[in-house]
Length: 148
Figure 1 (tube, rainbow, N blue to C red):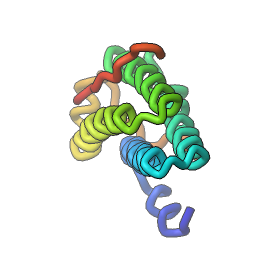
Figure 2 (cartoon, rainbow, N blue to C red; figure 1 turned 30 degrees about the vertical axis):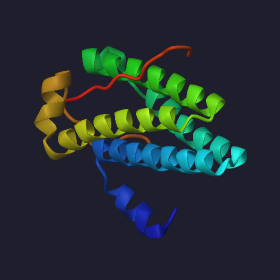
Figure 3 (tube, rainbow, N blue to C red; figure 1 turned 120 degrees about the vertical axis):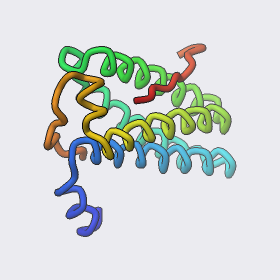
Figure 4 (tube, helix red, strand yellow; figure 1 turned 90 degrees about the horizontal axis):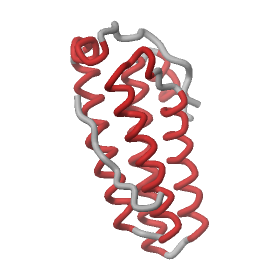
């Protein structure tokens, strides 16, 4: 990671860090699509591994006990997204990766709205926006989207 990017993330809010992770998912899903188009199995697997690492990271840090219904919806979204990406990888399916990316972009936009207006987060969860978070170092399952 570049020093510039590290400095930007050092001052980022928790929501800004989540948006950055969603940007990473879009970037790696795009790489997976390009790998499918080229027939590059290794590149596809590497891109899928990276996006799944992000999904696992986000899922592991959810606090359903604190976040209530929105956190539960995100948990279900991450589980469905994980399954969709695995299916896309197994089938080398550009379409499944594109569907997953569309859903990720939709939810990313919801997080961007939260970043612009922390009161949206408070209204959704009943909790104040956290100032910092830890450093972010299926069969027939459809990915659903969640919006703020």
